[in-house]
Image (tube, rainbow, N blue to C red; front, top):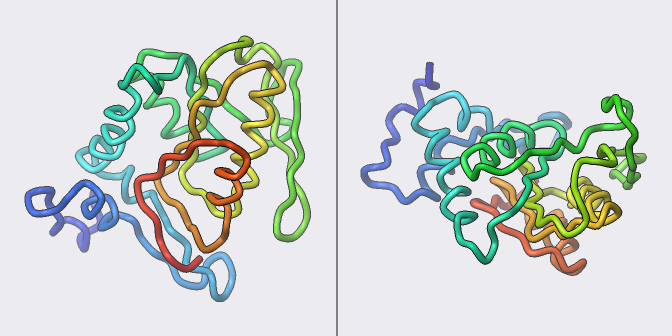
Length: 194
């Protein structure tokens, strides 16, 4: 059931941007003091809102000039979006997982976090050389996960045509870093602060 505070928002008087923004919950001081966590789960809980969200991506990627052959989703919320977008576009979906979660031969990429590092993996047969891949996640903060995902796909010879996310947190610099690396980005919303 939708969150009662959110049911008052109908698309009737709102743009897609405003409608989606109205359904993202900000949780102050989580997971640490000073962080404004942008919770996308309300976007997924209501069928109509979820459809509007997915359609915003589908309408973009139906354009033949940026239509992917494959959608790759970043662990874990990128799986939710990526699998549905791939299904709607009638293309394959590949998961980019945290280290140790894939059962077959993998390639891996380690990236730096604010405190420490993390590693993501991809099956070696997930994409073919020349595949045009849409790389998708829920949010871009520092850009580390998306950059690592792009490097994995490129190791296998795929071309990442665009990185996509629901939310960009531009003050954290991730989207600038990704664009500087040559990755085209598409995000539906940006939020100031972090």
